[in-house]
Image 1 (cartoon, rainbow, N blue to C red):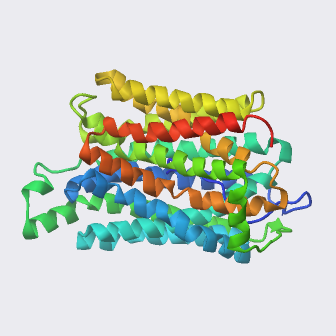
Image 2: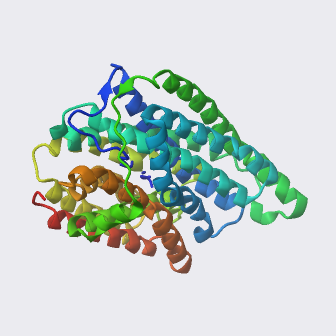
Image 3: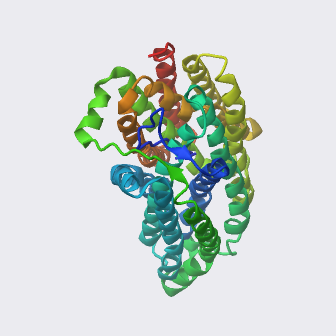
Amino acid sequence: MAIAPGLATSTDPFPIEEDGPQVDAPGLNYFVFALFFIFGGITSLNDVIIPKLKELFTLSFFEASLVQFWFFIAYAVVGVPGARLVKKLGYMRGAVAGLLAMMAGCLLFIPASQTALFPMFLFAYFILATGVVLVQIVANPLISVLGPVKTTHSRLTFAQAFNSLGTTIFPYFGAILILGSIAGVTAAELSGAELAAYRTAESQAIVNGYLGLAAALAVVAGVVWLFRNRLKGEKHEHTSLAEGLALLKRPRFGYGAACIFLYVGAEVAIGSFIVNYLMQAEVLNLPEQSAGKLISLYWGGALVGRFIGSAVLRMVSPGLLLATVAAGAITLIAISANSTGTVAGYSLLAVGLMNAIMFPTIFSLACEKLGPRAADGSGIINVAICGGAVVPVLYGALADATSLAFALVLPAACYAIIAGFGIFARKPA
């Protein structure tokens, strides 16, 4: 989400010049960190909701993965028009628009629960994700404004640590609120009116959680509105989609964009099914709520790793560090898939630590020396985040055909390609 996708992103609809936007608000950096925290936390809640909806609607792993598909496909659908909207409105008003869209998505869980229809939940997730995309389009470029250019790589990693803080905290409390409340019967044992009533009653926990988020988002949107005129000197450069796509012909950028697709897909695929994985008798044999709480360890690893990574990246080659952590992820996946019990469970959870620096490092390596084309590059990378829609669906289909453990070969293959990019881009562009 992670991106997510643990899921953090980087979308820059504005080229930041040396004499770019000026900050007229000392507290604006805290506002940006808060945005990272909010959209990270909301994205990671999908990992808690998926096992709940899987039970309520008796879904296969493939069908359950549609939650991530409809969430992350918003990056492909909304990314380009969203960037244009932010260009028109400006950073702060664009953030308000995104927060209001997120609030609308939260409120849509009310009719989704009342109708007890799975497609309604998917529609609510798409609207919620639309707002998340808009907020991320605003948040990442502001990092460039809040400090010197030479420390942008480190600063972006540090800011994404707040994203990871959200992905660590939200699933834990989400598991307490949403999981573990399933009644003595299951949806598979019911039919007709009893089944509809059961789904409505059991999904009320989901509704309550998102109603609380909607109220919090309304407050944040109001605060952001007060800052709407605090950023001076924004510059808007309009380019065509064809001009942006031409960047994919550059090997370094094209390879990097593909790796963003694969990284987000691998991170989200593991996070989406880790509850079901840990619940297996041959792994930790945990009840649903207990397994849900452990999601925080997966995303918490990324939190710790990003604080460490922001310092390490100042001293070592970003490309070689990327290759190293990708190899570490492959090793942990191999250990988990070929073992049982505590080793199988916690080695997979530890993959979160390996994920920590991947997104910001891939992004910065891919976009090196793009100069005035940096905005176009960021827009394409935003679309590449839709890997969080594609890879989990493939993982779910493979798990249905084989097993959750065997299906881990798919994210392992993604990490292998990412390791190759680290070696390819180990030298400055």
